[in-house]
Image (cartoon, rainbow, N blue to C red; front, side, top):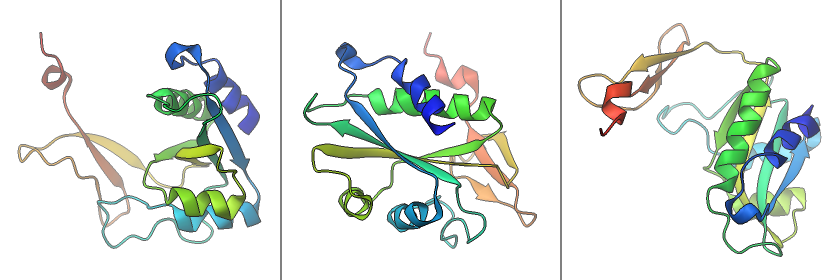
Length: 165
């Protein structure tokens, strides 16, 4: 399944069609345990250290840029990650793009060569929480939160606010 998701990314747009992205796939307990400590989770939830044992992602995709192919990776990893997450959703999985990554320590922990620059990590698994999209409140705060029942609320700007014409 992870290879199928990367295949979606492979077919996605790439700046100048350079296709510099490479992927490290992890879905075993040992490798996942080496990845987890190098990720920062949900920065607005100050007292939450991330998923607890038993609730952690079943798989990770580490998206890297191959410096032998390009020196700049533009927005390729964002495009690829979105394609992967849309495919994951179609397969009934939940996922999260994680940009708050200790890149060099992560690369060392899983043996990624210095030829590859870690750009983004995608965490995947069966969703265990309920997420609700809500309008950004009048205060303008875009910080997500959880209520006492554990429901995760994510404020989103309304469409008219995004349109400039």
